[in-house]
Image 1 (cartoon, one colour):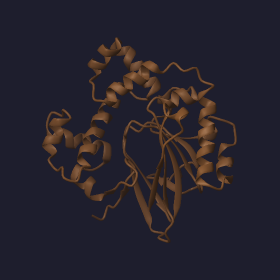
Image 2 (spheres, one colour):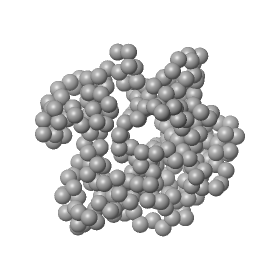
Image 3 (tube, one colour):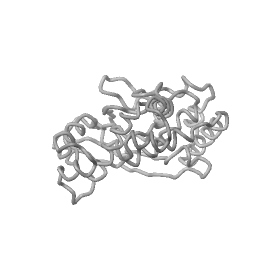
Image 4 (cartoon, one colour):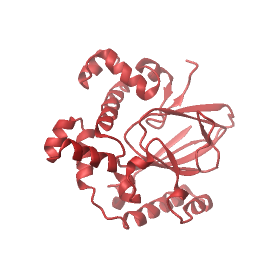
Length: 266
């Protein structure tokens, strides 16, 4: 498999973290299984051919779709070669770009054609080069951002506090917001209650530490990211990945973070 990342143009960096491309052009037609791990980031996904990836219920993912915030792990399977282009958005970007409350997308793959009428899928299919495809997506997003009244500063700041490990109480105090106001703001712009978003951010902090090849002390990780104990940390880890930390590190091949190729034979 081959993986690439591309930074967005400057005018899009407040809304897009990066573009990514994952492809397999080998002649290996065995079934490959991928896990999708909650990371607090919504995405826009384009599959260069239809009916490539299927979920655990044998439902095909749309060819061009919005992946809303994930609150639980899921699995995708693909057979044969493929190329997918993804856009990792900022946590508050869905509301800003589409003017739809972000929670409407939670744990869903929403076909872009259900939201907009312009023929962007047709343009992407007909574009020859990867550079052209990324430009088409960039122009589309820029066009829609300009249509939406931007009132996301509070939501962006609050989400950054939570991403950086501040507690809900600390965030409320810093933002001068009541518990209910913070709840409404984060749910509308990020897509989930602040408590769930904070849990995912803490889990991701631990996963980033675990990814360090020389780090294998789970008790130290648990205390470092303020879990009550190791068993609490492992229970939370299983909830978001479906497995324990040791098995995840053994079985997961993360070309793309939080979308690992999963080898269940190990």
